[in-house]
Length: 98
Image 1 (cartoon, helix red, strand yellow):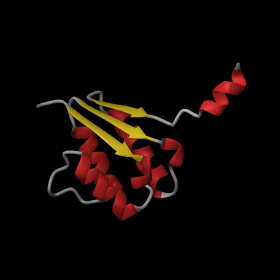
Image 2 (tube, helix red, strand yellow; image 1 turned 135 degrees about the vertical axis):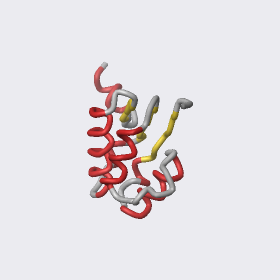
Image 3 (cartoon, helix red, strand yellow; image 1 turned 120 degrees about the vertical axis):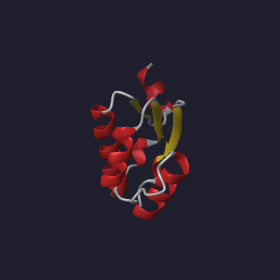
Image 4 (cartoon, helix red, strand yellow; image 1 turned 45 degrees about the horizontal axis):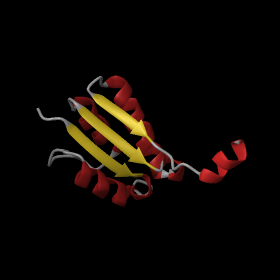
């Protein structure tokens, strides 16, 4: 199977319907994907050679926090799934450090 690379945007994962729309657009989920977190977990733990990047995780809210938990749990259970969570770099914080 070819390597799977997907970039997910946190702001699109915070509401249930938009989250599952975004996930089905970005990940190679099967047609029978049930559009719920249990189904997402099942699909993610079966992926092989996959890398998922989630941008702006500091914007996680409500349902998005649950999606992040499922992504994290799935990556821990599946060696073939690598997960990268990112937050934006705030330059003001760096200026104060120097």
